[in-house]
Length: 226
Image 1 (cartoon, one colour):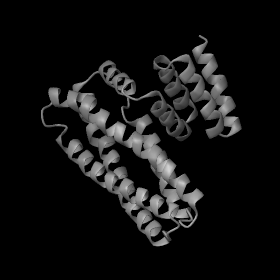
Image 2 (cartoon, one colour; image 1 turned 180 degrees about the vertical axis):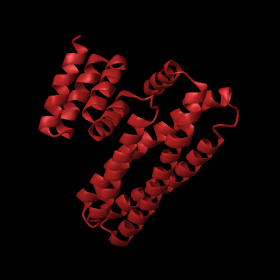
Image 3 (tube, helix red, strand yellow; image 1 turned 120 degrees about the vertical axis):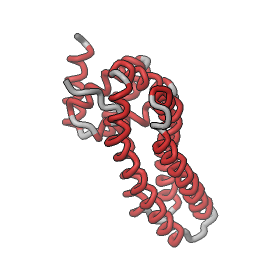
Image 4 (cartoon, rainbow, N blue to C red; image 1 turned 60 degrees about the vertical axis):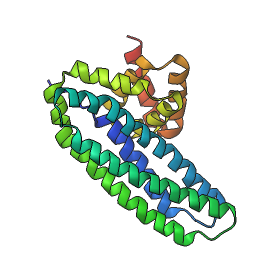
């Protein structure tokens, strides 16, 4: 029987989120306020879950790993520090662009610089999470049972406010296959209130192609109604 994959769902969501932000940064007209505002809003959404994810990983999963295997989380923590430093620079940069465009300043050159800065961060982030999936996952399997890893996941989920959880659903679910989607949302249903879960389903109706949403909704009802 295969072990619980700790990183599969969140990392698929983060790859999706960063890819959307990267794509939008390249096609944005930096002389148009409405387009820059759209990029700024997406960035704020993406950077928020990136921050929450690193903080909760440090404080829960890596903290527990340090107890079982002192020093084993050192490389991941150092990587998180580097990524957070880069992220703060990017957030400051897009805020500067947004402020300039609101004052009718030309931001085309800044936009090109932002796209390159984001590209470097995106590449570094992808490399970091790939290393976690290869190396850290093995350490977690070695030192924890699947039940303990699931308990970590629930604690991490509980640290996310409701609107952040909806953001996770928005980015994770479209990046998953049909079986994974049902499994993920079944898990989400166990920790979400009725209101929050219903909001998530309404959100996915907008995010997924109609045929994929209908298939997911039917499969989910079969599972949840058992």
